Image (cartoon, rainbow, N blue to C red; front, side, top):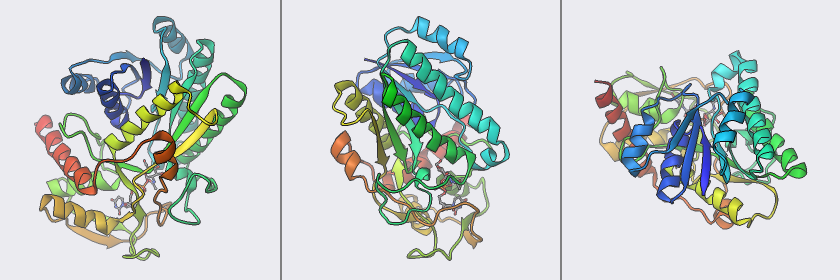
Length: 340
Ligand code: UD1
């Protein structure tokens, strides 16, 4: 089976390409290298002994995309990662986000319909739940008004799929990721930061490395056990494997509905302080941190009920928080070595 992975040289995309190839799939990547570099293909080849096909294409350019589907005739499924993903930037540049994230998805779906490709897997996010009314949050929880244009592109992306699946020959699964962290154990691929990290774990590893002098913990007066925000951190390889389970479900047509969505988390909530202490325990390195004001737009606590994904996708997580943080640390060190 041949799978098209858009954004396949990015963070979650590259890990998914590796797992797909390990599972025997042929992979073809489309990426515009906006947020990644071409050498990720070499790293994937080193890990898998197999190089995925690669096209540097703008998904917003329908002509380029038509040409691609002319050349690659036998694609069975599409996994769509390619998107802009900085929450702050999306607030400053809403149209950039709406145009890129929505048009790319619409172009892809139109090409799939024109080329009789039925199966679509979408990168969604737990951000669709906002501040959930009850925890752990399951898929029946209401969708809350998005706090940012980025979050809204995920909600709208899901709606586009729901409506398209109703009237066209498309079946789709949205995977609502919680907080993917960590890196491949080979330390050949991982999350690359451009400037100051916004996410917690890269900030922790950069502080441990000495690139940052202090980690600011945003808010310590939340209604949580230790006052800091709670999240469901999940190893990026577990997230990658959820995509393979989704592609298998689509191709075996074991789906109950043409459009489905699943929570992709571990089901365990960790606070920011839990994460700092777990990192210190896993690596033996102390983190210099300070409790500071809340960050605007943060939700207090969110973690997943994963029963539906476990039962329907036949997928479970394998990695512990220690595995996640150790691999994130090994990756940080490898990044520094490679940049020397
Ligand atoms: C963020 C995005 C969310 C997006 C998700 C996945 C925001 C407000 N939310 O989620 O929309 O879907 O990434 O890409 O950007 N923290 C610190 N200090 C730091 C960094 C983070 O205390 O330097 C805290 C945060 O306040 C939060 C937790 O760590 O409580 C996790 O933060 P982060 O890694 O940015 O993820 P989310 O906020 O969950």
